[in-house]
Amino acid sequence: MKTIKSVPGRFVSAVRRSFRQFLALPLATVVGFVGLNALVYLADRSWSGGDAPAGFRWLGELLGDRAALGSLLTTVASSIITVTSITFSLLLLAVQQGAAALTAQVTDQFMARRTNQFYFGYFVGLSVFVLMTLVTNTGFHRPVFGTTLALLLTTSALCLIIVMIYNTIDQMRPAQIIQFIHDRVLEARDDDLRMLAATRRTARQDWPVAALIRSRESGYVVSLDLPRIEEAVKRHGRKAVEVECVIPVGTYRAVNDPLFRLRCRPGTTLDPAARERLVGETLAALSYDDGRDLQHDAAYGLHQLSTIAWTSVSTSKSNPSPGLSVIQALRDIIAHWSEDETQPLEDPTSGIVYADAAPIIATDALEAVIVVASESIQSQTLTEAVKTLAILLRHVGQPTADRLADVANRTLSSLGEHVLTRQLEAELADLAQALNARGFVTVAKAVSEASAELAASLGKLNSRSTRVPGTTS
Image (cartoon, rainbow, N blue to C red; front, side, top):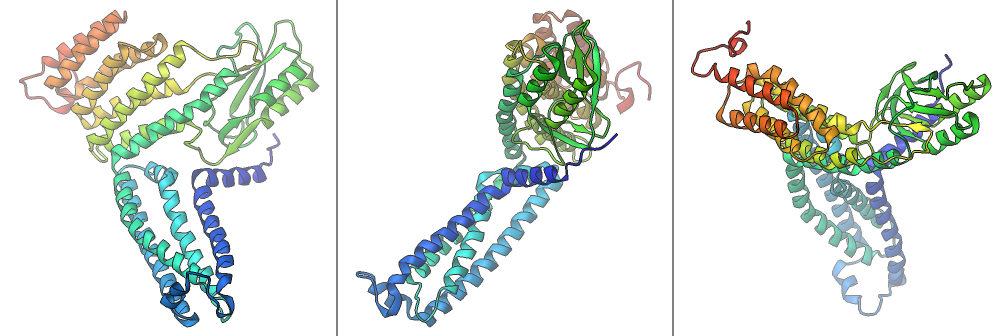
């Protein structure tokens, strides 16, 4: 199979991603400083030839002649560059330590924060401003206004260092990292909703599969050009064809991995030439990249939350605090998205079928936290997860409730690793009540029986593998 050559496209995507994730604001800030220097240069022309603008003679006398200005600007430039280098090195070291404590997701959220982007742009832009002002200091041109502004901006930068250090330390707290990712996940959901509103949820199962479209390159599928696919379906399929997306946006595909299914109306034969053009247009509507973007990929944010919880809760770190924060974030996300499942957005006339995978990924992430809590025997983490299941079951829509009930049923397999603490026992009883109230009687009975079986081990000396009677070591 001939592989699509997309190196230029990948390069453009990488550049766009770098600007979108970090470079745009810092470079814009630097450009702003350059523009400011140009304006100040024009203002400083009023000092040319030894003249002084009306009302500012005192400023020229205060800063001194050309030699004094040059010496002052040289000192300021070297100082600001040195301070910037040391400060940024310390900040990056703090970020590295935070990433080692949690995961590499710390670096992503640090770079994505607008305040951090502004700090980097401000210090670099100020250094450029001071250097450009120093260059304009000649025998004819005295940059009095430029030097004054450089001193004021440098003073502000030194004060800003205190704020920047505090913000960096504050951002390295697990709760802040998780809250930032949580907010970005909810924002990225808007992109999902736009795609869902332009497509259908369910494929016509009575329409046979005419072709399985496979990937011709590898990478993350970062976007779908839905209008292009829709236009291709109308032009070549004549409303007798639908394109079913096998994967959601953000999924990694290797060469020959399945991407789409082409379904045809029964009794309709798709012309080979038309099918080839339809396949080509559909593949051309995909955009691949080597990385994912949290700003437009809600599933990526859920992956980051799950990774943070797994790393911190497991015996690798044995830190329950981030895990509890992740569970609470997932509870809020699932609660927000449950309404989307009960009132699904779709276009019944669309020829594209696209499944809503994000809510399922959210409940799967919660399930993963429960699994890893059994490995580290963190009863407080399991208790919070069981509490989350009970709270959500009392108000979420039916599709979400079905998955949560299934998660509750699967959770019972890990209870044998835990001690039945008072809090865990109370939350398991509450979960059984919530399951009964939603009509999941069988699962509620299983939860009650598992809790009673675990309670039978209380007061007895058991090893980890034999805590529940009847298990084997």
